[in-house]
Image (cartoon, rainbow, N blue to C red; front, side):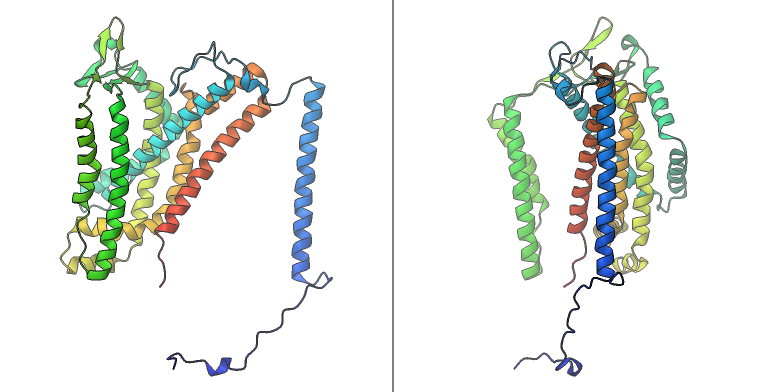
Length: 403
């Protein structure tokens, strides 16, 4: 016999019959369909007019249309690129792709650094240390009130005014700061490092699998096995063993001053350094306020209950408060990630060749203004949608699930 009971008011109740749509303006469903058709038709007609009018004007001025220009030799000098590029050989399409990669290099590095710095500043603003809280509050208020373009110009001029290579600052072994950029040691790539990377990925997958197994065991027995020793062994010890088994190759390339410039090593150009530094410091000020508001959104009873159990303040923040505050932090944090990516287009003001800078040069040389602007729009739309999709997936993953 079932233990469930039935509401006596629902006994014998029937679902009311659905009313069909009538051909009357008083029917809200008919009105909604008519208005949707009218709006879609109006948008379509406006789009058709703009396209046809643009095509006629371009034809009257004998301006070619299409994307065939992407296959022509570019001849655009590009100062820094992640892939090989020769302006005498490679095409406009490859030059545009280099611009996309340069934009992604700024966006990815900027998002990671701004998230870390903003989180630290946001937590520090809630510190009981009066001096630390006031310093971080001053940073947030000052940085947010100065236009981003002005900050980028400030950092660019500052890096450009560093001493010449022969008088470069040498804060650490193999690290030099000059007006040619920041020179750092670079590791010569060896095929063994690919195997190390593969071992790290396998160790990361194994760590995730062990973490899920530990979670299932905790639900079954109440005892959770330690995850960090297994993760340490799989993600660090295992790749190191693979590296040692392949001969332990290690060939650092140290920058050396030869003549009027440095040779060897890696270089962080003043343009890239100023752009990344300005975007990180500016966006971190906004992220700090988002993190602070997310922490304050967690009820004070969570702090008090955890403190009554004897947990330390840092443990409460990491294990209890921050996981709950993420549900408040993630949506506005997504907007800041999108803002950082779109603000990277200000790179043209300091000479960093991102997708906007290279597209502007391309359309000036080829006259394909509409196609160039369309490519810029597609690139930023794709990046923005990718960030939004990932953050929405992560937000849904950490959302509270009712039982």
